[in-house]
Image 1 (tube, rainbow, N blue to C red):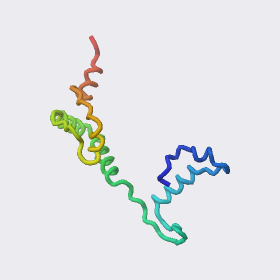
Image 2 (image 1 turned 135 degrees about the horizontal axis):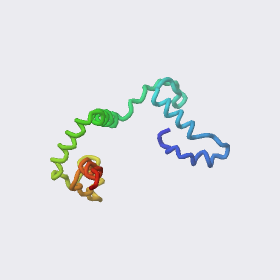
Image 3 (image 1 turned 180 degrees about the horizontal axis):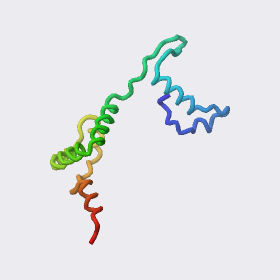
Image 4 (image 1 turned 180 degrees about the vertical axis):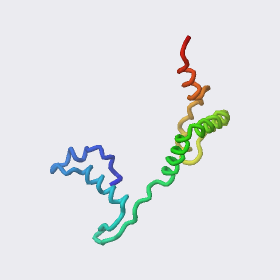
Length: 123
C-alpha cells in the first residue's frame, strides 16, 4: 500500500470504478495498527508498525526547541558562531547530493536579524 502516491489516477482509469486510493489508505491503517492478516493464504499476526524512528526523534527535538523560545535563540546563536565551518560536502546520505551540487552560500545575516531589521519602524 505504500508504493502508491494516492494521486487518484488509478481510480480515474479503473474500468469498474474501484476506489483504489481509499483501499490503500485502509491497508496503510491496517499495517500501522497491526493484527491478524492473511498473507499468501496463511493467517498471521503482524506487529504494529513503529514508523520512522529518526523522523520521530527529529520531530520531538523540533517540538522541544520550538516550544521554548530561549532554547531556539540559544541554538541560533550557536549556529551563527559556527557559520564559517560550512562543509564543502555533506556527510552520509547527503554526500550523493553534494557530489553533483554545491551547497548554497550561507547568508551574511541570520533570519532573526533580518526580521528584526525589517520590522523596525522606518523614520
